[in-house]
Image (spheres, rainbow, N blue to C red):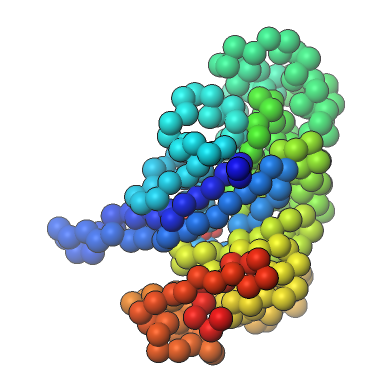
Length: 303
Ligand SMILES: Nc1ncnc2c1ncn2[C@@H]1O[C@H](COP(=O)(O)OP(=O)(O)OP(=O)(O)O)[C@@H](O)[C@H]1O
């Protein structure tokens, strides 16, 4: 049994299309995906592809419009409060997720108190150490910490209740490149202890560094899902190939190729990549086939 499974999950939001009219907009459509224990799955895609929406569904911050999310075989909505012990989260901006009035000790103590955990001091010290911070940080407040240190505190807090799954939504996006690797190393350390990590990112280089498997989202659809080697070294979906070929250079001064996010278009085609695809067929307007090629999923009619 997988640790986490998404079964044909869709999420629609109501958006205004006139003064008194609304329309359903699918941020996610028909997504099926699994995660195993101790796996680091990277969810990649450009801005607006539905990554955060998927993370929110897994964290029970939103309910799916269609489909189910299962954790250890059970619908996540059938769990009581214990779900928040099993699944925790780290977000992009630690400044907004840490209460500025609390000390690091208070921040770390809160979840333990809420869940009635004993030996709190011992657990706080050990989580802080695991996250690469010393005891001297305990009495500091978020304003006295650097961005990287704040993110370490957020990770320590997320790990305190010994979750089985960590959802990390763009956890390194607000950090310098040099700090990114340190944070990704913390995730690798957790993985080595059997924790599964769902890493939501638009940064393919982070994925290259630490992922086991990769899922590629585009406009709410899961277009490819396989091992890192399969998806990054030998991408099959024309969109994944585009994404990898057009990776922006690491240094901004060397970036020239336009990112696909610059191209705005709205299409009724079932395949969200239809208008940019060099290999499109007429059937891509009306259907999108999901096939498994060597164990990797590709949603594309050319296979
Ligand atoms: N509450 C909401 N109401 C209406 N539309 C929404 C809502 N939340 C998200 N969306 C839309 O759903 C789509 C997917 O958003 P989401 O935040 O999941 O994308 P993302 O891949 O995480 O993007 P980013 O990397 O920019 O955070 C976007 O077009 C967004 O505008």
